[in-house]
Length: 146
Image (tube, rainbow, N blue to C red):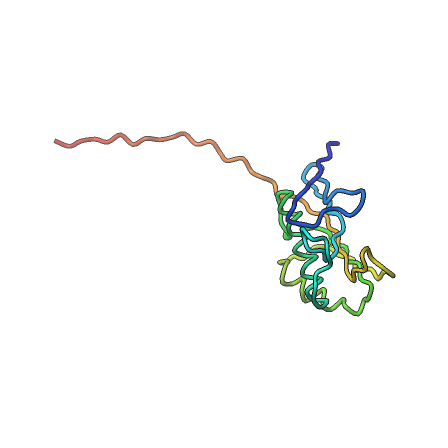
């Protein structure tokens, strides 16, 4: 099994001993993302909606760096310090994902890194790239009529 680390500056850098994502074959395992602003490493300012949206933006950036997108996600885990935000996660998620939605778990937790209120990780399967069929170049002979 070959493992490839996925790295992008478009998402927050890891704050521990882990990779932003690991790709093996067509499967990509995205590490947990909290609502950190890429570059600054600070929690996003704003309400819970802004925090959830920032997490989805971070996941999208890592998925893109891996060659996929959020619609390639097959499993999403959501960790919330207050499960009362579960309906808001559904609302914001619908803005980032199309149907069929990925399988998902929502888990209530006591605390998250840096005091975040939400964290999400994901598994995505990259789309198969179909090789283009080789076609013979057919040149039409131009015939001049005299």
